[in-house]
Image (cartoon, rainbow, N blue to C red; front, side, top):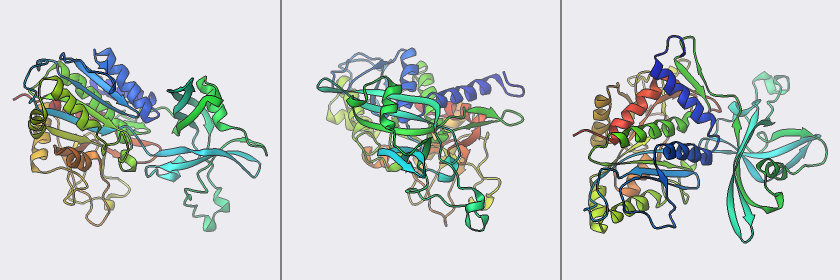
Length: 436
């Protein structure tokens, strides 16, 4: 145990660090969560198969998205099917640099890999870092295609910064996303196939690779930091902080069920608008919830009744007040790390929170014994958004936007409070399994 840290806080903070380090891509997030759920008695289902009507713990994966739920304690086939759902939502993707379809480049005697930003990456933070590669390959096997996960945790790539001596007035250069984020991976005047290299690392025939989604990740390990070990320094806290807390909350909720079916919904592609087959704009959540109702003996009427009584907490990380830039924050809504989860409200509906949803989450925090902070973005700055408004409009669910506070959002490396890991998970667990 770390000096000065309560045992539970230390375990939760270290647990988040291990989770993030195991999950460099959305596909690896799903694999990490799936492994933990399987250890706790969950069974993976496939959308193309018939699902069991018996109560139980289940999950499914669609690409980089995962939905998990438990119907234990709610009866099996032939029940009314009108039991409402309690849903914690989040997203598995994080801003980064991704590999182009024709990645092999030569420039000034350097072998380069063509990269492009994904999801509003803070480009300067990606310069001069040792980068690995992760993602998935679509590999031909006979007349079929199978998915192969890729993870190379070696310093393969590096995007070099321009020397200050070569910048105008020594003020530095704002990287151009087209010209300045390609990565060095060797020297020479002849290109080498990057995809052949990745295929070899994955143990597959390069000629059988028909498709790929590959991305970079920072190789510096996550760590509990600060003189009193009060902080977590890690990549991808936005939004793997929520993925981890949501997973912990679901595991706690299934052991102490309330009067609603607990659901964890983690979507890919939030950082680029959610418009995909597995994003929050897709039919994924609606179709899963309806199938659960149908298996419990309900029909369309029962599904609509169940949905009308359901509620969703859209979990995404929140902005802590920055000590070097306090003027960038709403002065009456200061947010501190290690001071509890954050309720996020925006009058222009960049967040989905309303009075009813806010009250539900505030009540959950009270039951969990954790403090609640309330965030409002400065009215003269553009506000980011979440899956909350999308989920609310696609499902009709009462939705509240919440998160844990952090600094350096969208940077290659982010910072949050170690105590907030536990408090965030406890609040989400109380939300999933309320005691009436």
